[in-house]
Length: 119
Length: 109
Image (cartoon, rainbow over all chains, first blue to last red; front, side):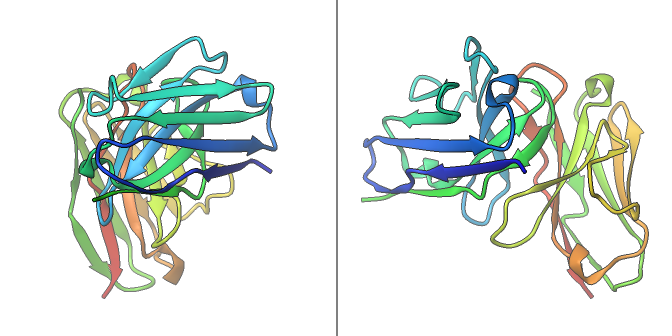
């Protein structure tokens, strides 16, 4: 069974940093591209970032480019999102998601971790 | 970037009725790489349909997708109580970024 378990969310002040992690199990992690998708309170879904199975290719939404960094450790089956210079508008539930390819459909989602940016 | 417009914003129906949800793209979606997701309160989204018309694993056959190019439809043939949720369409065929529609809330009448 595919399992994706996010961690690292919490309350952070504007301008601060946070690192999210996603522990994957139940599949060959390195064979799949991964993404982060977020959802602000009461709002819709917003794609944030994607990374290829090898980690060699990364992609970012314009809203986070230059502030967020996606990475993965295939030896530990872990996906990460380093978030710097956080803004109020980054407040959201962040979902880790498995996809068949970097531009492929999202097949599985984690349960999400809440990030709140507030002073 | 492709913009997806979902309609209606809210759909009020009764169990047993048929639901038709629309997703219109601002430009043609390559190879019909269009997906539909269901999200219930407090839960993560769940993949229902991909490639515009293929049902994901374990999805009941009352859910069907259709369309091509810029116009896509999700149909639920006979609503069950557990189907009342928010539904999102997503295009994923082009290089990132993906884009999602704003969602259709399906509520009990």
